[in-house]
Each structure stands twice: as structure tokens, then as C-alpha cells.
Length: 115
Length: 112
Image 1 (cartoon, rainbow over the protein chains, first blue to last red):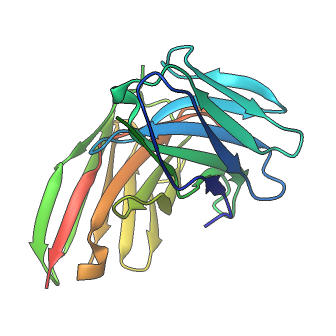
Image 2 (cartoon, each protein chain N blue to C red):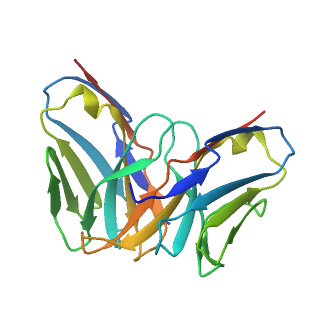
């Protein structure tokens, strides 16, 4: 546990609505990545933020957008929700660890259900 | 494009067995490989990380190996326990701090 927190824990939305998920990295972790994990699958990379800018992006539509604040916390916004957006959304930070390599640390996730 | 595959997708074993989980990746130009554990509905817990220059890492009853040239990694769990029941995910990173590409996971059930 690297102290990454996410909110809310669960939420239910209706198709077409918009949602905002939040992530707070541990102090000193300046890079935040977001992943989507559909039921029974491995997580898929959405995007990564560093110094308040999107640095990398996975194969997700523009309906998925994000923001990073000066304190390094981050938001993931999804517009025009589809049933297929139902998933566990994971936030991750990374730090140079005792392994001698950059390691990624994950938060507990937000479970989004779209009805 | 990196692709990661995990075999088997699901595994059920009696308590006490030694077992091996497999992970393969298509692009050998990796920075590191991580094995994670995920309990139902929860986040990911890092188990072991192997740098691209390393061959294996050990933590308690867990041993992970890496053969970068053949694009394979294995996670060995010794003397399995019911508490080991979870989904195990492997993921590779192409560069330092870069995105992780995950396999689909192996769902492990250890029966008492």
C-alpha cells in the first residue's frame, strides 16, 4: 500500500450522464496514471499525468479526459456514459523503489456501474 | 504493440500444492515486469518486480523468473494456502515510469 486513495468507492450512473472520479497520490508522488478494468479482464491504460499535463494516452476516446492539480491529485472525467464504461477504475502512481526500479502503486479503485 | 498473455486463465488446486503461473509478452524490449495480486473487487497489490537485467526475484513462498529473450515469466507459489486464492496479474513496462501492459490474469482457487 503506497497510500494512494480514490473516491468514491462505488457509484451508479445512468447512460448519457457524466462522472468524475478522484485520486490522491501519496505525498511526493508526482505522476498519476489511470486504468480501466472491465470484469474478468486485466487493467487497460487510459492516460498518465505529470506536472499537470497529459503525458501518455492509451486507446480511449475523447469522452475520457483528466486533470492534475498542483498538489498532484487527479481527476478522471467520463462524458456521455455508455453501458460498456462499467468497470473498476484504478489510479496508480510510481516511484523509484527499493527494487532499484520504478514501481507502480495502485489505489483501491472506484467501481462504476452504468445502467 | 506489446501484448501480454497469461495461462491458465483459471486454476483450482488443493492446499499444499506447488504451482506455476505463466506470463508471456510479445516485445522483449521491456523495462521491468511486475506480478500483482488482486482480491475480488479490490485494487492491485504488488508482489514482485523483476528488472529487465534480472533473472528472478523471491519473496517468501513466491519466486518470479524472467526470460526476456523468449518473452516469458513465471510465478512459482510454494506450498499453496487458501489465503493465496486471488487473481494474479502480470504486467510489463516499456520504459521507466511508462504505462503498464497487463495480461488477463490467472484466477487461482486453493481448496482447503
